[in-house]
Length: 167
Image (cartoon, rainbow, N blue to C red):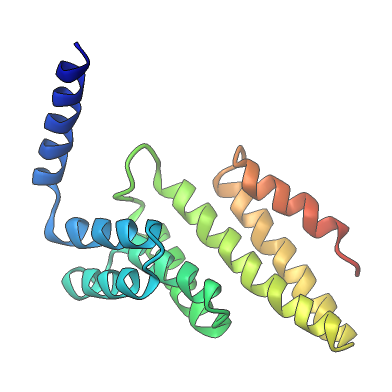
C-alpha cells in the first residue's frame, strides 16, 4: 500500500513538473538550489528565469532575499521593489498554495528588513536622525505587509519587534 501512495505522489509531481513553463522550471531549479544552500547557483537560475520572462516577480523577490543575505542592501531594495511592482501590476503568482497578496506581503516584509538594517547601522554609528527616519520607514513597510496578508505570523512578529526597537 505504501508503494502505491508513493507512486501516486511521484505521478502527480511528474505531471505538475511537465506542465510547468520554461521560466517556472528555471525558477524551481533556483528554489531547489537555494534550499540546498547553493546561493550562487540559485542566483544564476533566477537571473536565467528573468531572461526567459522579465515579468516574473518571484524571481526578483528571491534575488532580493539573496542580496539581503549578502548584506547588499541597495541591490536587495532594487530587486524587492521591482518584485512588489510586478505583484501589484500582474496580481498573480506561480507559487502554489498562495495568492499574489501573500507574496507582496513578503516583499514588503523584506523591504522593512532592508530599512531596519539601515536603522540599525545608524543606531550603531550614533546617527539619530537617520535612525528615526529608517525606523519609521520600516514600520510603514510592515504596515503595508499586514494590509496584504493580515494573518502572517512572521510579519506580525516583526511588527511587534520593531515597536520594541529604541526610537
